[in-house]
Image 1: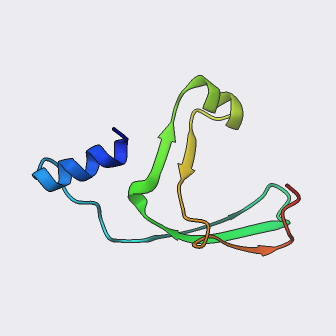
Image 2 (image 1 turned 135 degrees about the vertical axis):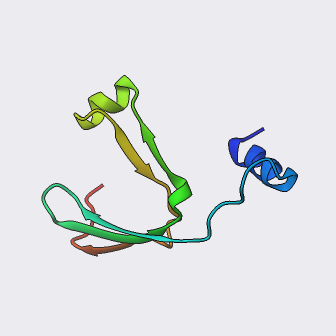
Amino acid sequence: MARWQRRIESVAAGVVAPPRRTRMKIDGQCHCGHVVYQAEIDPDQVSVCHCTDCQTLTGSPFRVTAFAARDIVRLSGGAPTI
């Protein structure tokens, strides 16, 4: 069973609180500033990982990942090259 399915069952059973319905505005850009993004995301869909792979990938003690649907993310500036 997927994590999201377990969460739905837990909420339905009253074991955990239902997810917040608030949105969080985020924005950022690539390293050179050519590509800029903006989105409104669900704060419950943000994760922080401290594994050694994520530490190596980011060069920091952790990596933050924010999940968002493709139609929610707005790109401005130049077009991505990948």
